[in-house]
Length: 149
Image 1: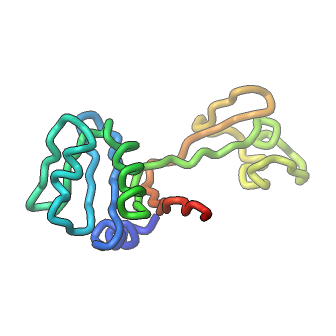
Image 2 (image 1 turned 45 degrees about the vertical axis):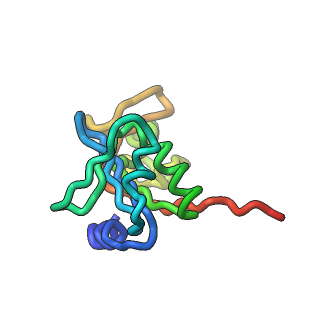
C-alpha cells in the first residue's frame, strides 16, 4: 500500500484507526475521533490503563485488545480502519518452474515458468511450492452490518 495513503488514513479524524504491530513488546496504536470520554471508553476495554502519547497523538494499548477494540469501535462508531503488516504468498509448482515448453497451467499464470528455483521457494511436494514476499503495510476499512428492520 502507498505510504501516503496509509499516512492519510492514520491522520484523518472521522473514523477510528487501529494500527496492529507485530514486533515483540510493541503496542496496538489507536486513533479515535475526538470525544471527551475517549480515555474512559478505552479503559473499559480491559484492565490496563490506555496510554495517551502526546507527541504522536495516539493511544497505546495492549496488543491483546485488538479484537475487542475493533468490535467496540464498530459498535460505537459504525466503522474502523485497520492498518497491519502482511506478506503476500506466491504459489507455483516445481513442474512449472522446471518446465521446458511454453504450456503453463499453474496458478502463477506463467510468471515463474521455466525459471527454476533460486532457493527462495519452499517445495511442499512435486506439485506445490510457495514463498512469502517481503512485509508490507495493508489497510482495510470495516463497517458494521446494519440490522434489517
